[in-house]
Amino acid sequence: MDWNKRHRGHGMSAAEWITLVPNELDIDAVGLWQIIPVGRHEFEFEGEDLKEFTRQALKGLLARGAVPITGQGQTWVADYQYGTISDEIIENVVKKWLSKGMHDPDVGDVWFGTVAVLEE
Image (cartoon, rainbow, N blue to C red; front, side, top):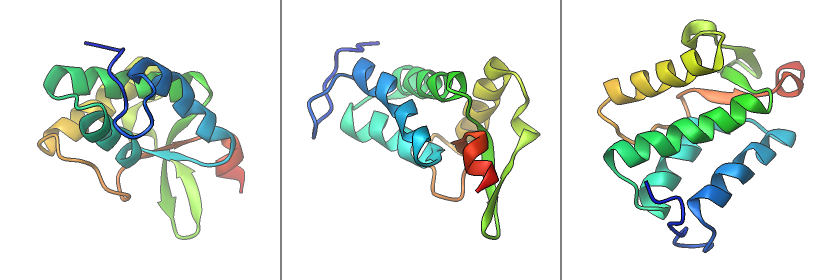
């Protein structure tokens, strides 16, 4: 995997993008639908590289204290169907995404947020 690949619009490397995406957690949740299309369309990753890009993005979010969440009405709730341990969550999210044929997720798929988002 080439972590030096450049974002088509912003010019930052894939490695830089991966380190920056958890910063969004300070203001909002991050959806899977925001990660995979960036890897696919902006960095032009496919196959195993796209899977690894996704895993690393999720790893960064979870390391910053995010948990899988889903919307219910006007609130967010923790979604424990993916597990409670980071590696387990990552693999289960990726497995579910792959079961849908590696298509770009939509806003109804899993999001990641911190306790602050859950308490809003």
